[in-house]
Length: 365
Image 1 (cartoon, one colour):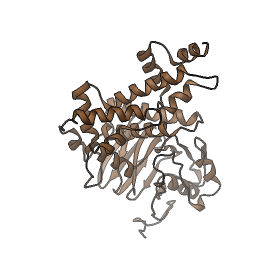
Image 2 (cartoon, one colour):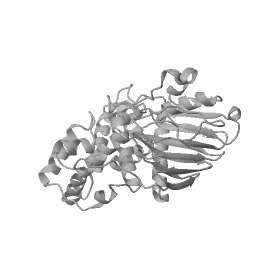
Image 3 (cartoon, helix red, strand yellow):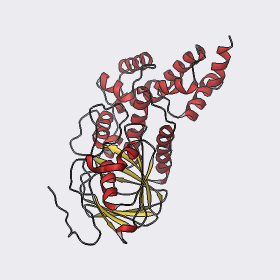
Image 4 (cartoon, helix red, strand yellow):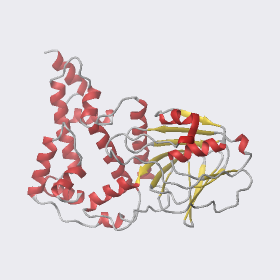
């Protein structure tokens, strides 16, 4: 077992290294964080999505935070007795969002980040990170990707609060392979620098969407979970440079008209039961990029746009046949639309009226 590299002096606390807790058995269902047996009285509160837990005991805080992220050591700048830790886990898809704040400056040794990719956004304050000797910093309004497999030391100032998306690296690498059309030969690794401003805006919108869905208290149907998961993973792959960005940017041969026609049929047939672009591409034996190039060449559109179109048509059919028990929200989520505002805007653009207007008009017949 790996030992702490520094002498245990002062107020440092140490937890042995071990694998993080990730549930890979049911890849397309909402994943709740798992907790070790010694987490104690806080485990139930944290496991309950959206509950804010304030912990004053440093050892207890390390156990709880370690079960959400990975085992680590914490060295407070001041007395450990005065350290408070606020923690909240928000789960709406397979990628949990974690809010974490220490009440005073801390230095955290997180080891090698086993199978853990964090998209760590600074809600306030500032932080720095050292991964394998490379150092970067970020501040409020910026997001830093922290890749797994690197010796990682983090330093947070007293005002730093993080809102971090915990990404399952195995799922992300499978998504990257789906885009490329072949297995990855090496682990994916992201550049250690904050997201560019233009992509930061997109990323923050995505995180807010996850938080909004979680705070609604609704259990998302399978189609919504799959759509949200694919959206988040694809956004991560294209939001920051990484070890496969060059390969993703290379030109690719377009899918044949036959492949495009087959994909259209599959999207149409599965609009109500749920599917994703990556799934259809895999079944057709092509990469997502090849399928995209085929749709662009034949229809000047994308597979995602075509799938959204047939889902909107399915929503129109369902709202036209609405009963007293039908709700616009249920229809949208059933079809994989997780952003209410965008669904309403897209629906109005396609059919000339809001979805609620269609439902009310057809109920009156």
